Amino acid sequence: MKNSYPEEFEILVTLDGTDTQITVKPDETSDGAPYFICDLSGNTITQLREETDGSWEQLWGKLDHQAVTLIGKAIKHKLTI
Image 1 (cartoon, rainbow, N blue to C red):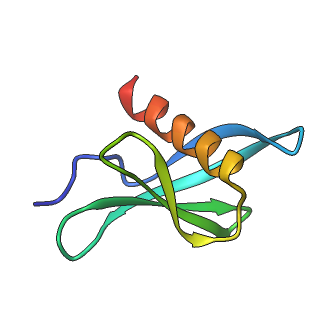
Image 2: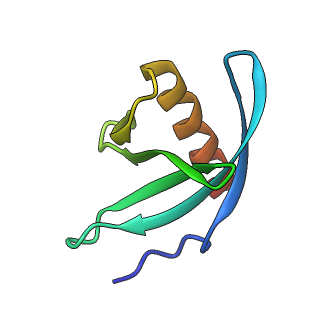
């Protein structure tokens, strides 16, 4: 069953003191678990998923834990408004 997320959406997060606009493209694994592909200026910077405990895990990319958490919270906020 396909998730009901928008095809893609924008979030604004502050990374290293700079307001950064990230394009988020929801997708899902073969078993239906959602994850989020995050692009900056047309380049994928990370892929994230929310764990059952509410924390965010980086599936691909080299962002630090703080950046992963900030982006994850922004994704969650955008999807709940």
